[in-house]
Structure formats: structure tokens, C-alpha cells
Image 1 (cartoon, rainbow, N blue to C red):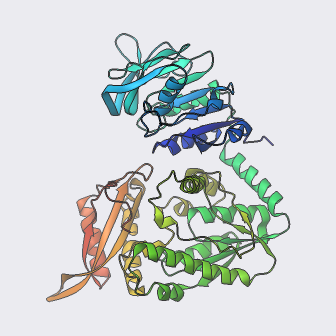
Image 2: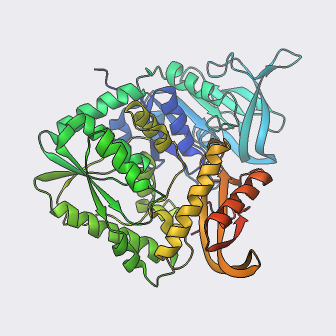
Length: 524
């Protein structure tokens, strides 16, 4: 079998919010890559043995003395290098060129002219101008520009505001682009990255869904052998795909524990059992622990404390169920690559963790299992593709993200079972109508929020004071930024009426029009 990790690209991260997108694009092309901080240990870079290196963008000002630099070893390995935005600027500075503050900043759309017909950009264009020059529609984000080329380099791109928007030393296969080919706004960005990794770096495109599945099943069989493995099955995408992989690799050596915490979507627990226990033949223990969670959360309104309580309660239930089982040697988890990146960044002090609703706790040290993490090299889109291939229903894989603490972070203030029951029904109505009106796939996340305040309503001839439900729907590419979805007024009117008519304890429905930033997607 072909080793799918042999041809690999190393991406050094200088802190751009787009950096993960570079890795995702390279993987989509079919080439394995890893994303590491720019100051990673030199020996790791040597041992990684990349066929090419990409230097990402970043927030630093390259002209200051203490700004980040690429490790010198990358220029000694004799492999192709592509610098993007800040990556290009630091290449220029380190190789004898110069970068200075730009008179005209460029943030957003730009049109560049390809020059000198370099191997990186030749025959890649969005249009041809009247003079016969190839033009590209790209996305810029910079206030610094390269003003002097290093020796041996030539200009390969320019824009109206940026004379050196790209450079190259074709003899060494060193390239720099001031624009961001990884973002979707750069229309031919993926073609440019494909040109770099597959032609200039000469990487084979072995990183495919079928090859990844074969590789994972082989390594799982080797790691687990004849032993038994335990998985905490949440019903989310990651744990579901791990369950399907392990079922294929080790069959009845797998036992899943599904903790029903009373904070799931409507009928979600039954759906999980149907999909895995009945349809796929996976051994699933369902632990009905709703009361334990509601008791633990009683009288607590602080959002961070609620998350920790939910996390600890889950661990308690999971540990009790695990201790009932015999001969379990391995514990499987659905850790994915962005979790690994974020965790490493947090440990180094270089990452600010905003999406703390995912961090609900870890497993206790005294659970003496060896860890199995088959997804830790994969991005979410890769995990979904594997799930489809393994037969998990598409609606489970492609539904909107659901936070680890479930409805617990969508009930503001204190959590009560009454509130969860109301919210669950409202959320189900919202999802139902989104599907019926072909809107579910047109937004990236939608949900309801329970507001523990009472507002006046009218039922027949009587006034009533009951709870408020907020609807939230956003459009986003990467969940880093988002705008509120412009859902049709008639649709919102219909959803609002259904919720208030079908749920007796709701007297008002509102629609959230906050963007991220300055708001967040979630409410807590």
C-alpha cells in the first residue's frame, strides 16, 4: 500500500487567522501537510523531511527588530518554499531584500497582473486585459510591502497599489505572494497552491478519502490488536466517525457509552441508538443521566461554571459506566487536527482560546486506558468525507455544529429541565421549517436560545406573561467571522407563529441580527 504520508508539505504558522485554510486547501488537493508554529524545533523540521515549505501570513510588522522570522534551516533544506503575505515579507528580509510600510494599504479585493511568466503563475488567470496580460482576482490584507527584491529574485506579480505583489527565484524554487491564495475570495487560489505542491514540489496526490480510511483501519488494527476499546459516543460528527472506523477495524472489540445528559436535541438519543446500535450493529450502552446533570446545574447561572459542571458530570457518568466493563485496555476519542493545533497553541501561550464552550473538561488520570485518537490528523471536512464513505447518514454528518454542552449553552442563566424542554421543542420547529423551506443548507449554523425572562403576550382575550425564544442563524466560511443570515421575513413570521402557538410557555420570539465580531455566534 502507498504510504500516504510520504509526500508531505510543512506549513509554518506566523499567526494569520487564515493559516488553517492553507492546510485545508493543500489537503483538498490531495497532499498531506502539517501546520506548526514558525519557531518549532529545528530537529522536528529536519525529521519531518518535507518536499516543500509554506510560510503563512501573520499579524507582526516585519520591519520591527523583534518580529517573527522563519528558521534558517528552511533555506538550507533545498526544497521549494512559498511565502504568503507576511511569509513573503520575511523571506525578502532574510534573503537580502527589503520591506517597508506601504503608502497605500490593501485590505480586501485586488486585481493583480502576473509578470515574467513564472512556473507558479503561468497560464493561471481570471481574465486577459487589452494588452494581453493575464489578470487575477485576489484577496489582499497588508500594510507592509516588499520594496527591494533579494538577489536572484524577479517580480512575478504586481497590482496598482503594490509594485511587488509576488516574486520568485525559479532556480531555487522560492516564491512569494503578497495576496492570500488560501481564501475563497482569491478565485484561482487553489490552482496556484496545486501548482506549487504538485508540480513545483512534485508531491503525489495520495491523500484521498479511500486511502485515509485504509491507512486508519490498518493502524487501528495494529494498535489495538485483540484488546477491547471503549468510546464515549456523543452523537456528534467526530465521535460518530470514530465509532464507524473502529467498528470496521475491530468489530465487536468496541463498546460505546452514550451519555444522555438531557441537553440533547429532540429525539437525538433515539437517533444515535438507531444509527449505531441497530443499523450498524455497534455495541452501545445508553446511560440515562438527565437528572444527575440537572441536579448538578441547579442554581448555577455563570456560563463558564456551567460548562465545567456539564464536563465533570459527563466524566463521572462515563467513569462509572467504564468501571462496569471488563478487559478494556483502550479509550477512543474524537480529537481532530484543529483541536491539536489549538491545544498546542494554548500550551505555548501563543493562542487565545475564545471558543471555550468546547472545553468542558478532560478524562481523569486514574482511568488507566491507552488513548486511541484516529482523527487527530484530520480536519472536519475530511472527517465528514470519511463518515459518508463509511455509511453514516448525511444529515448527521452535515448538520450544523452542536456544542459539547448541548442546550446548556443555549439556555441563558440557570438551567432547568422545564427550560430545556421548551427550548428543545422550539429548536425542533426552527430546524423543521429550515429543512421544509430549503434554507438549512444555505446557512452555516442555526439554533434557538432560551431567554429566562417573561414578556407579555395575548392568548384569545387574555394577557399572559411567558418566556422569550431567540432565533439565531449565521452565514460563515470558517466560523471565525460570521454575518447574520438574511432569512425571509415571511419565513421568520411563520416560525415565530408556530413556536408561540405550539409551545404554551412562549409569548415572544425575537431574531438575533448581531454579527461576529463584535458578537459571537453562540450566546454564552
